[in-house]
Amino acid sequence: MAGSTHGRIIQDNQKKLNHSSGRNSSKAVEILLIGAVLFVFIIILIIPLISVFLKAFEQGAGVYIASITDRIALKAVRLTLITMGFAVVINTAFGLTVAWAVAKFKFKGKNLLVTFIDLPFAISPVVAGLIFVLLFSTTHGVTAPLLNAWGIKIIFAPPGIILATIFVTLPFVARELIPLMEAQGTAEEEAALTLGASGWKTFWFITLPNIKWALLYGVVLTVARAAGEFGAVSVVSGHIRGLTNTLPLHVEILYNEYKFSAAFAVASLLTIIAILNLVIKNISEWKINKQENT
Amino acid sequence: MNSIGKPFRLKHKSVIPGFGITMGFSLLYLSLLVLIPISMVFLNSSSMGLKTFWEAVSTERVLASLQVSFTTSFLAASVNVFFGVLFAWVLERYSFPGRRIIDGLIDLPFALPTAVAGISLTTLYAENGWIGRLFAPLGIKISYTPLGITLALIFISFPFVVRTVQPVLQSIDLEAEEAAACLGATRFQTFYKIIVPTLLPAIITGFALAFARALGEYGSVVFISGNMPMQTEITPLLIRTKLEQYDYAGGTAIAAVMLVISFLMLLFINLTQWWASSRDKA
Image (cartoon, rainbow over all chains, first blue to last red; front, top):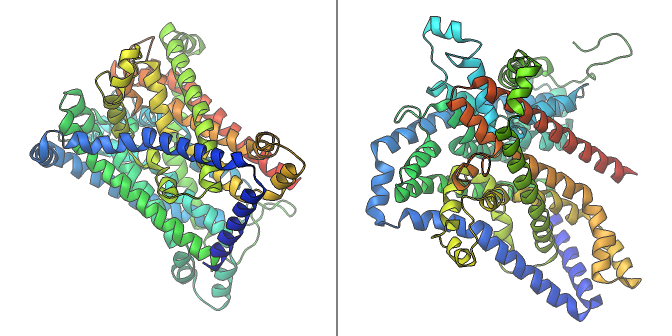
């Protein structure tokens, strides 16, 4: 905390310096630039955000409540929650493991490994869906003979949706943890181990408290993306109502049926998740900064 | 595990336990979930034979979709370079009421599901929408045109440049700027000769990230583009259409092209980072 106030004082002094040395025009430029930012911010980000809620309530609260408590909507909520659960648990386990391996050890090929973790971010969501179709489609997939013999359905069924979602959310926890754990180094863990703590105990009592906010933020990002993923899920879903529709796919169906208020009502649920995500992000960033400065 | 031969070490010695198990699990997980699935695209494409592959990816419709995707993504990323530098500058250098709120909401496009962004923007910019209505009398249509696609792509890739430029701007020494000002440089000259060169790697990285994200974007564009083949059909949508028509080979071939482009972008971004960090050391 002390560090950041100190930083702020320096910044303020620099601002004063800028002003005292500045020309008359600098204040005008400042106002102009701030005005431009406010204008762009409102047009590009705020109006689309607010319009979701305005459109959702356009036909009154009755339609809103009916739309989000509709039987098919609730099934979509359920599938979205299940998918989210799988993505969070599995990718948190992966994120912690890979971050431990990458951040606490030095080895050859580390950069390549980190690039592999980034791959799901780099490729189009549609391609992400396609790769699982190529693997698990019962008509075109490489595993089709096996799947047909065993009667397993992955594509156009919930397992495909879960797989595709796990794929697109794979990097989040790992990407939040790796830089932080690398910056924190290994000194504290080495001390604990030298004093006789077991590896597991060291992780639980030393590493985990140090990374908890970054971990939380990684999980929040995973939740938001899992709830909102559209492209990849749309390819593997098959759009069977009540069975393979997640919330974003349900929004699409309602919108394409011209049920705009209902579409925006369901969309507003996803928007609330997004806003919560931003709130937690800002809290955890503040906590991480505080941690670093003490 | 620890060493292969004497001089070459795969891994440095360490007292920290758990390298074998964490590394093993990570590699297994990445192979099963990322590497093997992605390699399917290339396996399937290579089994098509070069001629069929070329025919699948060089049809007029595919080329038109690539053109739409590249132009709109390039435009969106360029606009975001301008907005990004502006936002980073104002947020880092000026204090004004609401600064923290704006800073906190910059990441909204990353948090908001793309489908939600898509229906919201489409409704706003349609001819009878709240914003589209202002442009309709001028004869400008936004939704269901390439302009609409560009707009959606500007939205979804908005945070990249801001977030890459901000930390660099934070760490810049004000001394160089002050020196330039003392030597009689105008503010504009200081900006172009001192600040822009320092920010350049971050700007290029932000541009590339935004461009890559825009190229692959599907969820928001599918609503606002109108999806007219040859005119407003982006490449990811064309892949999706091919799959719906059970043309798996055609879809996979286009996906292979998209993947190669993604890998090149990733390589380019990594090279830029490497260039930036080696420049900082020098």
